[in-house]
Structure formats: structure tokens, C-alpha cells
Image 1 (cartoon, rainbow, N blue to C red):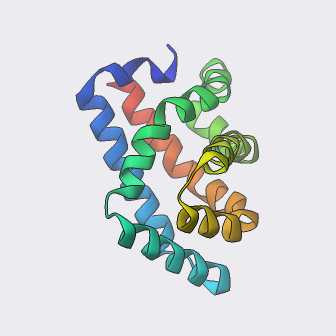
Image 2 (cartoon, rainbow, N blue to C red):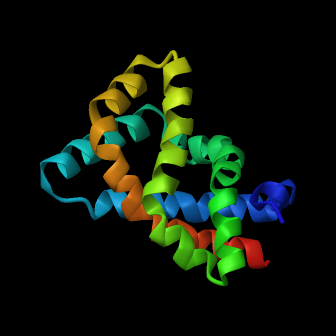
Length: 145
């Protein structure tokens, strides 16, 4: 099974989008330090522009994201532990996901979002890596149903 196969089911898609949005909200809320403050501020700005911006972005990026993670997930299935494998390969997974958002932001005409992303991009990889275990659990739940 390719991870993105189930997205044609609107119920599955809406559940994974909601779970990923909740994961993002939780990850941002739990950030500390100077970079955490900057990210929280940028996140508030983006949500202030349009409250559903992050949910909509997740929904739009989901098929590409699942396709990018599929090879790592498939390796994990073959090894008998896809959640553990994706978590252990969080560096590779983060690079795959950030390549998608980098390309999307490059093409964006929204200067506020583009500016916020550019300022925070250097620290983004660590934050994405930190979210991979939660994302792996979401994918596991989604792929079983």
C-alpha cells in the first residue's frame, strides 16, 4: 500500500488532517527558548492572517508529504516496525518533508508567510524531527483503518 492511497476517502483525509493540525498546534505550544518564541510569534501571525491557514496547508501538502515518506515507511514495514523505523530515520524524513515546503514557499506570493518561513527555516529541521514520532503514530493509525 502506498501511504497516499487512502486519501481518496474523505473521512480518512479529514481525520489525518485534523490529527496533523493538532500535532502542529501541540508542537508549537510546547516550544521553548528563543527560537520557540520566534516560532510561536510567526505561527500566531500566520493564524491571524487566516485561522485555517495551517489546516489548509497541511491538507494541500498531505499527498506530497505521504509520497515523500512512503519509501521510509515501506522500509519500516519490511523491517517489522514502520513507526520505529520512521522515528529512527527522522533526519531523512524531515529532509523529505522540508524539501516539499521549501519548494512551495519558493513559489508563494504571500510575502508575510514567505518572510516568516525564511527567518525560521534554519531551525525548522530540528522542529520537524521532533514531530516525526507523533507523525509516525498518526500515519500508523491512519494506515491501519
